[in-house]
Structure formats: structure tokens, C-alpha cells
Length: 345
Image 1 (cartoon, one colour):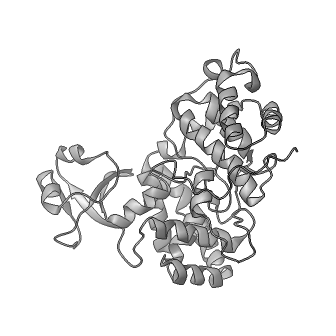
Image 2 (tube, one colour):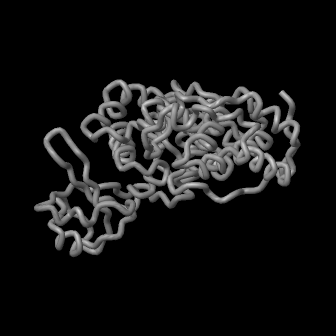
């Protein structure tokens, strides 16, 4: 391929989304989607290079220092991928907890996780000591995201980001931003724009980092001069740990506490994210009480999941919110937490 010249490399751009990484059955995206169809987004669409919004994007990248001819050649080789649009419309997180949990918290994944922790014990210990993040949490994230490296995704990242950036209106601004990050990242980390593969949402590597998170939080943990989240276990492990440190993970602190709710007043507390913001008094006023002992002066979020025997209720500590910074779904965060607990020595 024609190489794209440097574009003000080294800039550490702001994080592009409130949830940094996304997961699904393929270890990929959990963005809430809307149903899409070929007729809505693709029928009659001209090639990308004939679209005004693509021309505007190329103009912006040229102003940032990239070569127009190389960018045009890049877009000439991309076509909309209906499969990507279909997948992002059916995230795993659309399932109820009773169906979601068995995908990620099961005997096989726990067994593989223990093997992984034995094989990577040195790097997991080093990451725990360096970043202050529990080694079992690092393993659980990688276990949920890619089944310990077994599934890194089979889509070209370029195809995913162009398709979603220009043919998925609900999040096109976000994905165009990620496409820009990917172009910069490819230059900074010597990634092949034509060959780099990942999830249908453009997440890459063993921890499934989107491009902006890769640039902001990845670390060269093995000291070879590259931040390689695709081929290097040390870099993947260290980068997951660094992400959690940067988002204020508190090692050794609790994540959730079981609760019960009476009536439906608790519904007023649902939504709005999972920051730990409610006092016990506020929760009690809405019919919610902890089942186990919690700090009397603590602050919590309210988590409601659809279990096999009805709703399950939990109070979320600040650490639960931190997990949702990796993926904003409460199902994802709870699966990671429960897998973490199952992997503890």
C-alpha cells in the first residue's frame, strides 16, 4: 500500500467516548444500536470517494498533514459492509442478564482463565505491582473481551470504521473520530492500514482497544519500543492495567453488594450511568436496602439485572463504575466482576 506520511504524530487526543471499549459475543462492540437495513443505508449510495462527507473528511486529514493521494487510494479500496451494520444493531448487551452471563462466566472460561494466569503470571504480577490493579481483573477483562486472545476479531479495522463512520448515522461522528485516530495510530505504531483486523466496531488487540483508547492508554510494557496490543501479551496486560489505573481503580476495594427492592419506586434511580451517587437514605426512600453490610456513609449506584427468577438488585461501589468506563453496559461490568472473583487464587 502507499504509506501515509506523519500527521503531527505524538498528540495524545482526548478520549472519544464515555465508554472506552466495547464488547460483544465476538469480543467487540456493545454500543446500543438501532435496526439497520441495506435499503436504508446502502441502496443507491455512490462510492465513498464521490460522497461530499468523505471528501470533507479527507480535506481535514490533509490539513492535519496527510497525503491526499494516499487517502484517496485508501478510500477507493473500501466498500460499505452490511455485515458490520447488522452486527452493531444486535449487541450481546441487548440480551437479559440470565442469557448474557452464561456466555462469559462459565466453567470453560474460568478454566482457561486460570491457565492464562499461570502462563502469564510474571507479567500479571508485574502489572499488578506497577499499576495497582488486581491481576484477576486484568485476566477477566481479557477473558471477556477475546477469550484470552482466542478471538481478536476478523474484520479489517479500516472497513469497520469507514462503514460505521459514513453509513451508521446513530454514531457516525464518533466512528469518524475513531477513523482519524486509527490513521494516526497506524503511523505512530507502524500498523498496516490494509491488514489490521479487529472487531466489527474497530476494536483491536487482546484487550480490544478502540483507536483513541489505544493511543491514550496503551503502554510498551515489554520495553521493545512499540505498543503492540495485537501480538504482545506484556503490552496487552500492561495496557489493560494502565487503563484501569487511569480511571481510578481501587485495588482491594469492593465492586458490588447485594440488595433488595420493594415496589417500583426504585425505577426513578435507574439510568443516568453508574456513578456511585446515592446514599443509603436515598436508596431506602425508594425501597432499596442492602442485603449485606455496607458502609453507612457510602455512596452507591443501583444495578438491576433480569435474572432467571426475576430482577436481581445490587449496589455498585465506585469500582463498578470504573469497569463501566471500559464498557458502559452493566451486564458487561457484572460479568467481568464475577469472572474476576472466580479467577482469584
